[in-house]
Every structure is written in structure tokens, then in C-alpha cells.
Image (cartoon, rainbow, N blue to C red):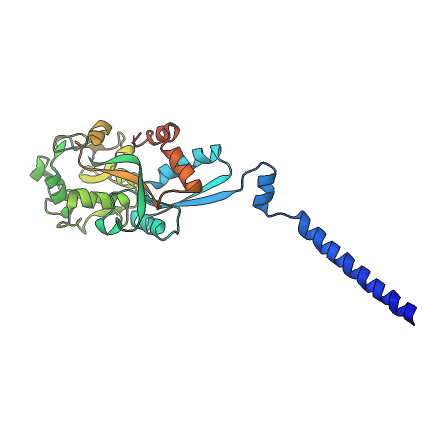
Length: 287
């Protein structure tokens, strides 16, 4: 009987030892993906998000593509939503980087955001090339045209024809900047304006209507439309940099506090000579 009990006790102890060994073996050979990658010389994968201005979005996508080619371990997820949403996303930590295409409002400057201006953009007021008589407008004239107060081209030196206003959608960074820089607090864009969802769509609308007027980023100018001078100043890069051309704005990356980690690496790339060369394809570099 004693022998039988002893045999059962030994068998039980041996089974327990084997179970512990098996569990120990399973736990000791596996590592988290990031640790395994690090120990084999590969950096851990990281994803950051930049969200906000739809004007900045195409530039961010091009910059992200070039950056990821150099840093394949970092994925930059580029999203739109508008400048206001970009500011909110950065302030609330929803996105590592908020993209904004206007100056921060006073109420937004207390959110603890750090600004990195990555590019400058002028907003050109454009007419149809067939509108040969109108080549120079004052900011006051532009404001009254877009407010619907001036309704005929003859009132600003053009032919006797109705003015067809083309604007951007609510929430657009380009529209926000135009409203701030041209319309001011006392004037609003007329409800009779045609609303277009992008710079390219505004350009197409103006190109197809001899009586139209709209506004687009300088980077979208081509032979399809004619930019007009504002108070005698052409919408050109040198004039934006010098401050002579008044309808201009910054493209800003915002972070909650100083940028850290992968977000810092991306912003440093954007401000590097390589990044600013990409900026210069359509916009005005800051470095």
C-alpha cells in the first residue's frame, strides 16, 4: 500500500514539473513584436496622424510619401477635415499633428499648441481670361464683390455684365483665410455665390464662365484663369514673402507641446532642404 501511494505521489510531482516546464518554455521564447524587431536590429513600427486643413492635405500626402521612403518604420496617416478640426485634433490629442492653413485665433492660442510654419501660400483672386478689362482690384472692391454689393463688372472698370461669384465651402481653410483677410468681421460672402469643394473646382468654374470671379491658392494658378492684382500688387511668391501681397497665409503644423518622437522626425524632415524642395513645387518654402 505504501509503495502504491508513493508511486502515485511521484507521478503527480513529475506531471506538475512537466507542466511548469512546458509553461516556462512557452513564455520564455516569445517576445512582443516591437522587442523582437528591436533585438534583430529592426526599429519598431510607428504610426502618426496629421489631420486638418484640406489645403494642406495634398502637400502633407506628398511629404509623407517622401518621408516614409526614408523612414519605412514610420507611417504617416494624412487626413483632412478643415483647419478648425486640425486645431481641435491636435489640442485634444486625437492627432499627433494638426494641419492649419490660417493664423490661430486668440481663443485658440491658449490651447498649448506649438506652431511650426512649413510653407506660405498666397490666395489669388482670379477671373476668366476673356475678362481683359479687369486686371487690378482693391481689397475693398473684392470684398464688396464677394459680399454681393458690387454686382456688375462695369462698376469696377469692366463690361456691362453680371458678376458671378465662386467661393469655397464652409470649413475650407482657403475660405477661412479669405474671409479673415478680405471680408473681415463686418462682411459675409453672398448666399448667391456658387460653392465649389476645392481649389481645382473653383478654377474650373471660373475657367468656364467669362463673368466669373473666384479665389484659389497661388499654387493652383495656370493658364485657365487670370489672376488680378490686388492694390497694384501681383499674387507672386516674392510679393508674398516680402509681405507686399496681403491676401496670403501660412501652412502650419500644430502639436500639443513641443513635438516628440516620430512627429518630431516628420516635422524636421518637412523643414529640411529635401522637404522644402517638395514644398516649393506648388507653394512658397519657409527655409
